Image (cartoon, rainbow, N blue to C red; front, side, top):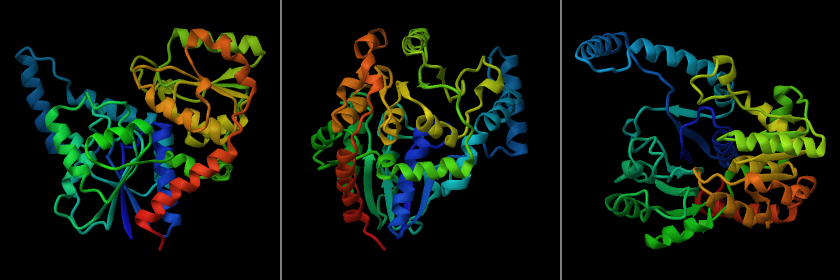
Length: 375
C-alpha cells in the first residue's frame, strides 16, 4: 500500500522531525511504501516573479508603504539555508518527502491511504497547509483512499480557536475517516463532541525502541557532550536560566544545551544554526538529567530512561504534557521553574517505565496494524 503522511512541515523542530521519521519507519516495517507531505522552505521564486515583486514593492515604498523588498527575502532565504542545513540533511537522508506548495498539487490516484498525524496537526493556530480543513483531508473529498489519523493532536483541551463554521466543516470531514486516534486523552473527548470515536495512542517516537535511536547516533558519529545537565527549552527566558544555573550549582553538574537561537533574528547567524538531530539525541544518551519545557524532550527522557523535570509552558499548552506524563505515572515531573527545589530529588531518579511503555506500545501498534495492515 502506498501511504502519504500529512503532518506539520519539517524544518528545524527536533520533535516534529523525529515523530515523522518514527511513523514512516513503523509503516515501512509493515511493508508499505511511504511518502511524507512536506513544504519547500523558501523555494520556487522565478527570476520573472522576483522582478515583478521587486518593481511592485519599490512602487509601494514610493507611495509610503514599508513592504519588505525581495532583497530582504533573498537574505532570509540564504539565512534559512544555513540555519536548517543540519536538520535538512537528516530529513534528506532519512525521510521520504514529497514537496508541494499546496495540497491541491496532489491527485486522487497518488496514494492508497492518507495518514494524518502526529504532533499538533489539529492546532488551529498552525494551519500550515493553508486552512485547518486541509489537516482533516478536505482536499481528498471524493477520492477512493483510506483516511486514518494517528496520534493527531489538537494541542489544547478545547477547540475554542476554531470558528463555528470550521468546527462544522472539520467534524464532517473527520467523520469520513476510516479510523481516528489522538495523542491526548482530551482529544478523545473532543472527537466525541464531533460524533467521532477516537482511540488514544502513543506519539510515534515511542513506537520505536531505544536501540533505533542509538543506531542513528552511531551512524552519525555525533560529537560527545561535555556536561551532565541537559537543558532544552522551546521558549527560554531568564527565569528558566536561573533555574538551570541553580540546579547545576546544587548538584555540581555542568549544564549544556543542544539547540540554536533559530527564531532570534538579532542573534548572529552562527548562533542560529540548529545542531544535527543526532547530536540532540545523543544529549539524552550522555546526560545525567534533563530539564525542559518540550513535549518531545520528555518523550526522549523516557526513552533513554533519564531523570527529568518539565517546566510549565502555558503558551504551548500544558494538556499535552499532562496527558503524556499521566500515561506513565510521571505527573510529579511537571513543575513551575520557581518551585524546582521541591522536586530536586526527582533529578536523581530515572523514570523506569519500561514495562508500562511496552504495554502501551503494543496497544498503539495494534491500532495501526488493524487499520493499514501489514504487507
